[in-house]
Image 1 (cartoon, rainbow, N blue to C red):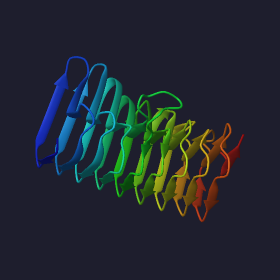
Image 2: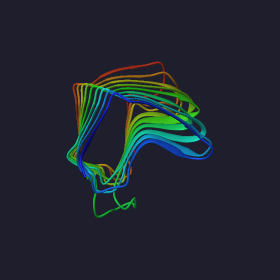
Image 3: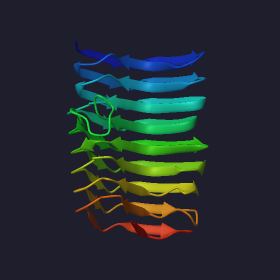
Image 4: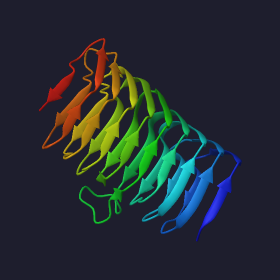
Length: 239
């Protein structure tokens, strides 16, 4: 099926988990544009949840707020491909919040269908509360991540961008990333290789927060032209 979901106001208050917009999977040619989505719940919530092997989406101009005492994801995709996520405003106010979360299908460490070939451009992501991630990429490849504004202001573990377990050949370019909180790195690569990190502006505001971390079999990454300002921690951490 295909659809256009435009200019709706969606307010979900769930007793447990809930979604603003939910795709059950294997859909294509869908536009989600200029919607206002607020989702709160006691367990796990998501503003836009994209099911397995969905592709050719255009998700743009939406205002998304997620709230709750447990976990929330602004935009969540599994095996999500060939799509555009641009110019969205995402506010994470759940205890553990993810602005944009892309993973493989099925969601295992080394999966058959990765999330791939997506453009993530011009989004404004703000994570506030206890723990969170602006962008979380797990086994995601060929993402173009360009000119996003990402802020994490949390107690602990406020990652700007995390590339995790098999995320390869992604380009992270001209993003503005600011983190505040204990162990809150700007960009963190864990088992992530052949990525390009170019011309980003990164500010970290904690002694335990390093600007760019490259750890655990992350090989052949290119890091060039980045501007780093920090109140604490190191510019690079290699392990």
